[in-house]
Length: 169
Image (cartoon, rainbow, N blue to C red; front, side, top):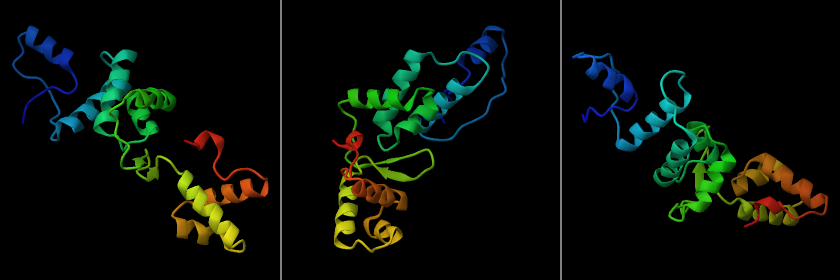
């Protein structure tokens, strides 16, 4: 409806300067946030025209963190061409970033908790109270993957804490 150019500003300007009345275009119907995501995707991966420089991609990542706080660092990294670690550092700097939902959606579309330590503690408690329970049973009762239960069990048998040091708040 707005006829705002999402990708191809330079091509449109060149057409206007050369006196052209028409230009081939693909129309996009969506919200302003969806148009922004599309613009980032198109301007970080295509092989023609000017790509976003690092400063622009960093600014775009900051805006995506604000508009899509539930997206994972890897999801935003895949759009901006930055690393997931860089996105994490930007997220830490954004004081207004809202993690109140407690989950983030990854590139695969699955929701994962921002902090899984509580679930790991529940797994640990179930392993102590019922050591013969199957990994799948505990995973289903707590709502985690079987690999998480397996990891907690392996850590406990090795005399380690159920929550890895890097995942502790």
